[in-house]
Amino acid sequence: MTTQPPSDDPWQRPGAGASGPGGGSNPSDPPLPSGAVVPVPDGGAPVLTVAADGPLPSAHGGPISAPPIAPGPGVIPPFVTPPREGHKRRLGIGIAISAVIAVVCCGGGSVGMGALLVASGHQRERDARAVVTTYLNDWQREDYPGAYTLLCNERRNSVSLDDFTRSLSSDQVTGYRLGEVRPAGTAIGVPVDIDFLSGDDQQVTYDVVLDSDGKSRICGAT
Image (cartoon, rainbow, N blue to C red; front, side, top):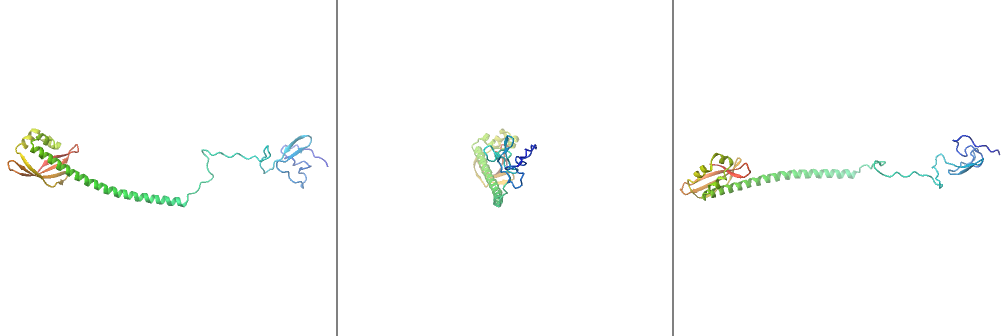
């Protein structure tokens, strides 16, 4: 058998054009397995065969595998799990509960605001009775400067303390009785039956308003 010299083609696979064991020139010869060492004539270095569609062999004889890609920022999973039906149902229930809470809170807020207004009105009525009571007590004790401070800013600007003192000292209060208070616009009306030393008893309604400093003061009498 004649030995065919090696091909000069550098891209020819080892053993593809040589005869002999694993030469491949004979169609009946079986293909060389991946990783087989094929001797080369004329003292050449042995060649390690690599299958066209197989993995590259390593120095230890096993296939070389690519290292895994470490997870990190920017790594995108191959697919995202679609939302399940249970999640949608829980979301719908949460929205419904939130709507019910909002309705209850709004309704409760309206009731609470109404109760607050009622309580505020009652407080103003109590303050009005207290102011008129203090005013009449000061008058009865002849504490005219004290009674003068219970007048609203508008009344104090229109009458001096001296004129106010002369008016109240013209008769002596011996007693008084407060009636039922009643709102009169922005004021609270406090009716009073006043007994005087002269016997000239009177029925007076004092109008109590919130002054500029937010305190209740007397701002008129009818």
